[in-house]
Length: 359
Image (cartoon, rainbow, N blue to C red):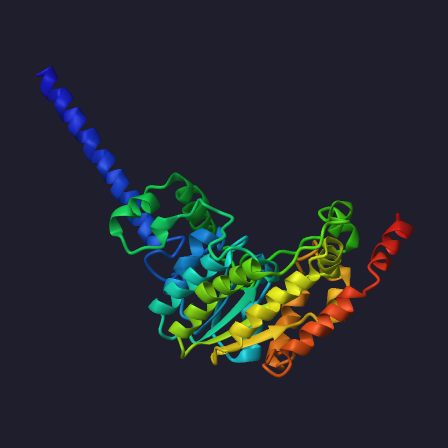
């Protein structure tokens, strides 16, 4: 008798556990905080965060004909501004710290799935031109969210972190009637800017008096392989899509570092090699804003030597809409020579005098 009771109790426990797991799985699939299965429901308030968990779902299921992508340099773009200026219906999918390959692979998946995606705005990190084509900063990747294998979805529907960081905020916000994160707000930041803040991360003394580094066959090979495999091959694969690319306009402190390290010629030669390749693609519009000196030389726009505030992202969209800074076969060599002349002869010491006086 006792053995039968024990068996019945054990069986009931298993059924309850199975029922609980099924309930959890159904709730995750219904709410789908990372849009792995479907587009967002209007009656849920979604919290957009954790880029590498949510971006593939956005590209897979959101209604859009345009996408903004890039590293953290693309985080402060507003899709509403792009749509108003360029007549698009866009989404934003930044990948902080990404290499060219990661961005390329994500765009490839998006373009293959969504035939309506006709415009790509892509922030090309200028300091990434001389990295290996497969350079990556992050190894830990939620690959189960990026494939069509239903068997590894258990890592999504039964994931404690996803329940806590993904599902719970959506349910809580929805019950409290709080609005979800807008695409403009997604991944954007309003960190402190200005020269004093830049100097917290820019150690100028440690970059001085370096040996000059050349741009030889090895460096040329790195640039051309990076651009060919990650951009040119992708762009040629989707000839009906317009790719709007721009080199990220870092601050004057970045150019100061190039000057101190004696790598300015090397970097601009990398730019020349990349530009020559990109201009051969008829569906690429390439932009370069290094001649926007009022912005680049104004440290109030920058959080560190590279990252600019949302005001600069808004300017970039306006410049593109006005076709300001467009790079062509006819002007790219002149642009590079102007960069070398301006940034090679800039009075960098003047930047820091104000800080010394203020200190």
